[in-house]
Image (cartoon, rainbow, N blue to C red; front, side, top):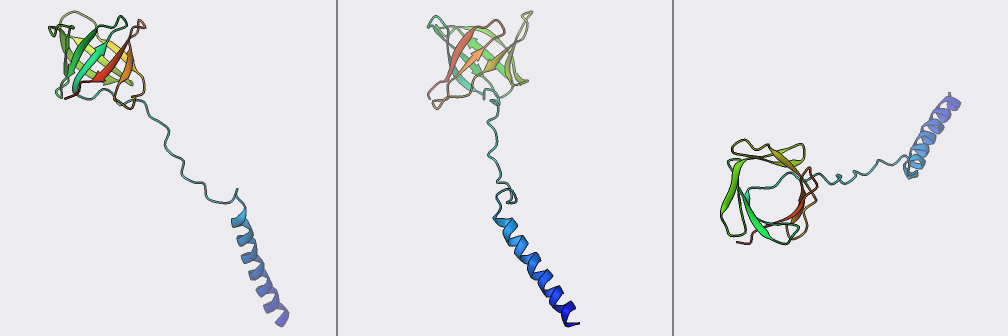
Length: 132
């Protein structure tokens, strides 16, 4: 009987010892939660934006909370308006009338809030929030 008690005690002690050794093993340690991967831009928020064209001219776009937009030329004259939506990771502008919807890919946003938008034809513009 003493041998059985001694054997049980040694087995229990051995089990505790193995768990302590296993916890020191980095492979057995619980994995740290990895930081989430950067996500694609969520789309341009409603607001007023300067839009710098490749030739250096600066026009503007206003995106409204109600899902509409208005584009103005460099003189401030509204030249296009319609519906705005964010679809499949792109900003999509559907002008009033017969013009087709055009969706622009977005670069990550820079520290100053600016980003590059590229249309399907490869035209790139730099979009910057207007300062209040």
